[in-house]
Image 1: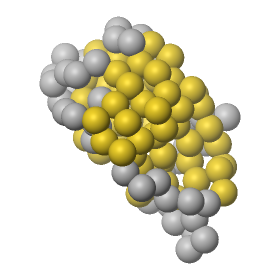
Image 2 (image 1 turned 45 degrees about the horizontal axis):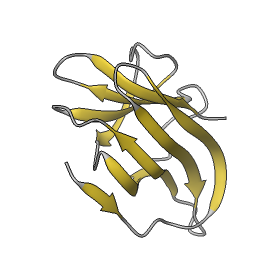
Image 3 (image 1 turned 45 degrees about the vertical axis):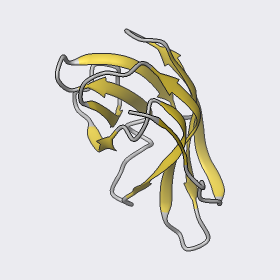
Image 4 (image 1 turned 90 degrees about the vertical axis):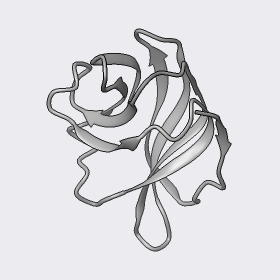
Length: 114
């Protein structure tokens, strides 16, 4: 995975969090924003983590990843990027954003949305 610097969507920030390291050094911020059209986005800024196999972005109420809602495959290990998220995503109950290695069931890092 490479560095990515997408044009980030604008809008009102609903919740935000800062990444902390678990098994691998992970830094940056993440936030949920709602744009003018009412769509929600999970926005990563100044993000950085180690590369790994099959890294995923999950929303979960805890750090063990059970239960979870999958946002998608991690787009990049460094940079600024976002995911469109469905209105069915529960980022209030599932307030932890996990960077999860699916192959080895390892938590690279997480952020708590507040």
